[in-house]
Length: 476
View 1 (cartoon, rainbow, N blue to C red):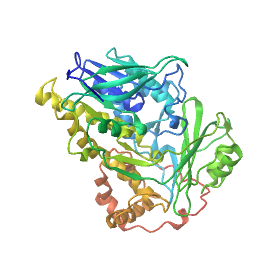
View 2: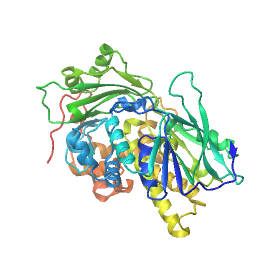
View 3: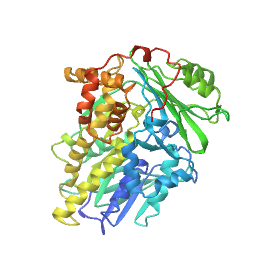
């Protein structure tokens, strides 16, 4: 830790640690509140739209929930048209995606819950270009943040940056970079707990729920003559009897990202023959039949860092001014539920509101107290996504984490009934997925229409066959 007596940077400068989705949307928001934003990124970016080393999950299916798509459209006007021009049009998540839940195929019906059919590298590259078009924002590539700078009041006033040498044998230089506000958006690998310890703060408590889920993914191009009523497919695991699932997600260029997944350490393999055999073992033959006719364009890559991890910064009795943490650095979710990019966008929106409120109360230069207030507001914002991710994981027998409470188990039974109704009731599907896409409060699950459906359900045995051979027709 370095101690400095200067408590404010020249002008109002913010530093964002990390330049992935969370960092980019945060930088865009901060530009409304400070004079300059400097993003610090370990990677060096290529000119293309390919997965990069710092985002190993970039090879796998990435789904932006409807709430995240809405927020990105607000922050980056015209993004939807830009992605469509790149070959990534909008998809209706309940109308265009065939979804095999543990209780059977969900009814397909348009809901207005639209999302981009785009790969993670394409979306990130377009957001980065938009952010860098703002002259107030810069990115320093190939740099590591190795510590926080604090003053004698333990307020954060900047970061210590190490410039990675471009070539082997070159010396790595350190420098101090002052800032009015530092944001850690560095993801799961965040070093904030260690940095806070260096400043004299306690280590935050953590909650971890790990279902030991693993991915294996590759890019495919569908057969020219392949025809189907769906644009994407999601086969969910059905623990405890079936731990396997898969996603076929369309992306730009008329390609598919095909991701296989397995819970409870039933990890999908990365060699082709075993990959295809795993796909053939899923609860529906339709998944295997689709990719069997397709051509694989990329190597098969695996990914296993999927545990839900929540760092409870909101519970700390004291917190340094001038420093906030968001995105996966605070709450990382099992990526199978597709919440990460959406929660990152929601986190940036929370920061925007907190800073705007602070400016109205105390003026442009006053940040005292806003950092701790933000962490508390962020925890509330993240709570729904955390519950939606950990609830299904905790039902799997191999999951490590605090066992569900009596109330949790009652909720699971209620949701089971809702999902059964979603196999045959378009209105239930729409209301359910507005909650799952973080577009409305979970209280919507208890709307009289939903309660009546759940209480009057009859288990759809014919739709719960263990090897579903056809998808439901699309309701209009």
